[in-house]
Image 1 (cartoon, one colour):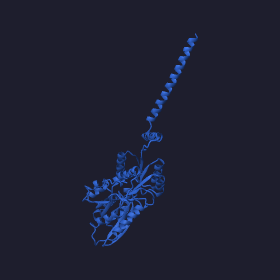
Image 2 (cartoon, rainbow, N blue to C red):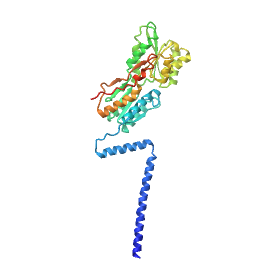
Image 3 (cartoon, rainbow, N blue to C red):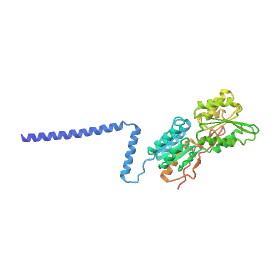
Image 4 (cartoon, helix red, strand yellow):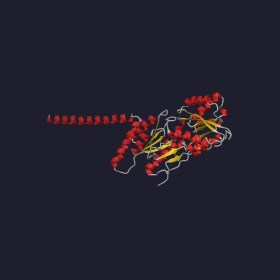
Length: 359
């Protein structure tokens, strides 16, 4: 009888142990299922955290994965999506984790918040544009983040790696040279300018450079007005209609925002005056290139938006991993005028990457 009781106790203990093991296995399986159902971003963050923990715990010199954030001024604008393509391509080639962020419409405040968020999330490098206020960008630099500006600089930020963008003085001279092909030397130029905004030094300085280039015209010069598109074609069109109705003598239209040239043509077509105007634009959007081929605009200034993403990411990477630095802070991204003469071959020149000098 005692032997039977003993064996019964043994069996009960074994069953208890087996049940406990089964419960632990079920809990493990459940946890795995929850992890697998998380969004990709959460899974990526978890993987990054695990990787960082492994590096920290191993005591080796293994390099952590780099994380770059591109704070664009316009998240989905066609011309900025060219920069996104370049940025994504570079991040893929370099094995860098990259995020493309930005407001849907121009917003300095939202860009500032996105820079702050990038710093809080541990970004190693940030690429941004001059509409963003200087204070959060300076704070990022002070926090040890490598910062590169594109398109329009934030030159008050001390310690930024470099600026990659448009040479606004060269742009102005190229526009004047093209206008002189359409307006005779003894004819007065009555100029109207449209830009995206007037709340940043970039657009103010760009406007001033245009005026400086055009005011030397021997036939005389007058600046009729400056209007703002807010990076919106409908707004730009309304502003151009107001301009043409208020200043009927305008004969040269300089557009310093990507959508402004097409807005100008829409307005001038409506009034039937396009053939009387020399219309100049910026950027190689599909719409601008179509207008150029059709003869409705005389030319468009372009820079390499591809390299605003591609070369900019490479420069951050080369600086962080190899200690390379640019020869100068301000760097031209290939400013050129596209006309009917070079429209078929200009694009290849814009995808040439220039590496930082080796140490």
